[in-house]
Image (tube, rainbow, N blue to C red):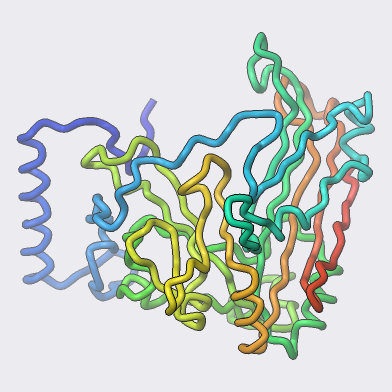
Length: 357
């Protein structure tokens, strides 16, 4: 079966290395002497990332991320998933529509590093819970219970925060129509966000822009994305990667306005006095990707800049796996929610919606 991939997870012979050198020299000669045509309307040539011609990232020496612990209780201080009680309801149809056992959201947003006591806010995180599988069974051999959240955040001007929060509180986020972090797999980790590859990057979402669809076009005010995603998937032709991985990066607006910079440490951004302000903890600890920002510095910055932060939650309780037909579907619980911090207090709630067949 043929499959398309941009990876090359294999050791190459010495002769092939020289072929790559010749290929890139040839690309340089072509770009110096011929007009660029990308086949999509004739965009001008801006850099080799348009051709997917850069395959080694010299600014990232990570071979892989620490493996996530596969335990009943994830020992990740930034994603404190306590043991979930799967059998509060005996029948699957009863469990999947029950709202009584939904985990609280605040512990995933306001977190503390036990090593030094520093306090952080999570700007993006995707916790999930899967019913344990006995060693004698395959993961998807039988239908099993599954629960997941997608926690994202946005910035909004203070003058618009109240009406935007009210509007979001009435929305159902199912369908992934809310803006998501931009993903980049043609850039170097050390290029965020000064390099020409980001010349067309836009962190501000204008709901009234041409082509914006409902319900996003009905949003009462613009908002700012708080994160982007770096992907290592092209960094493989020298076999420097053991596995492809992603890192969450603070959004360009935050980096610019807070004066953040990286100092060569993967996924970490520092302020002018050298304090760590934002990072993805999955670089250093085994656990899921997330983007953390130092709580005191970030909230002080937002207050001075005249902005507020709002979190949205999309989630579901579902039955996954097994062999079953349409008539066997038990329904699902679709979850939406909006949260904010006001006067130091975390406020908001989840709004579950029962979906039956």
